Length: 319
Ligand SMILES: Cc1cc2nc3c(=O)[nH]c(=O)nc-3n(C[C@H](O)[C@H](O)[C@H](O)COP(=O)(O)OP(=O)(O)OC[C@H]3O[C@@H](n4cnc5c(N)ncnc54)[C@H](O)[C@@H]3O)c2cc1C
Image 1: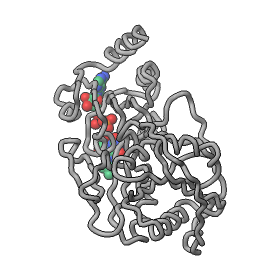
Image 2: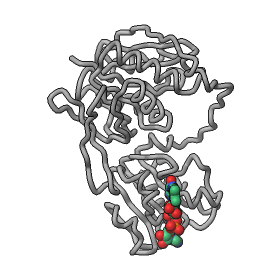
Image 3: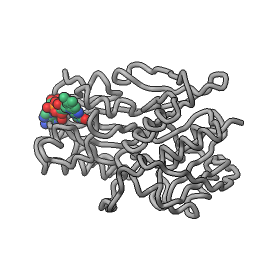
């Protein structure tokens, strides 16, 4: 069966959930082969095999992780040339999309981003993308080379499907160009109890309607009652009410959770671009004409300062 390469996202072997999701999607169209770059394979190998990796290409040369993303694109290009996979799957994170673009250039291939589903049409891998505020689903395939597909986190639930997980060491002779941007230091971000925004199953986002930095606590309380991540519109970030890494939208992060709750957010096209593929969308807004209501599955017309505390209380009662 034809291989589907899956670039694994991890920190020292602690796997990101999206990597297991990609293996699950790869399994539906071919034979999953994980590509693990960096340290920590011993911590990760069993889980990769459990979720369907027949082969695990292990590249633990320190140079590969010492120079931002270019070396990883060179490694993947080499694997594409040697293994002729039917597709390469990469998480549609900021880093992942940069690797996907570079890899597509190196392999003269088509790149498809923000995919929410995959299927196979007579051996051709077809990606599903959601556009126009989620109103239209398009199916696309690459017309040349190997399809390089950046898949949104949360596109599918990970499903265990035990496989061999045979480890194969791989390496690449890096070009000088790949060593152009060196990582001189990295700092692990202080993380609270909340899940990471792009990986969370539930996201509660606050907009300008929240009113102030202090009022974001109302959004946080609902998020915490649901075990959700907290997002924000750009208006909130620009006002300095919440950190930039929480921004959802065209110039922020793309999220695709099971449930997205937009609070005091009008629903500008640039905000929608980052959340329109969420499975269920709920909005709380005092303006019944707000464009966000065109997009929602459930809408609450009301003052968020009244609605959110009540919703939080109800969620707490059901625990
Ligand atoms: C190039 C470019 C890139 C951009 N990128 C992004 C991006 O990545 N992400 C992003 O979000 N935006 C982005 N924007 C900005 C975007 O156009 C909007 O300006 C922004 O999303 C508006 O944020 P908002 O919905 O929080 O604020 P507003 O549009 O001001 O909406 C506030 C909403 O809160 C409601 N409200 C007010 N008080 C209450 C209350 N008490 N209870 C309930 N509802 C209330 C109002 O009815 C209103 O609908 C970008 C813009 C440009 C030009």
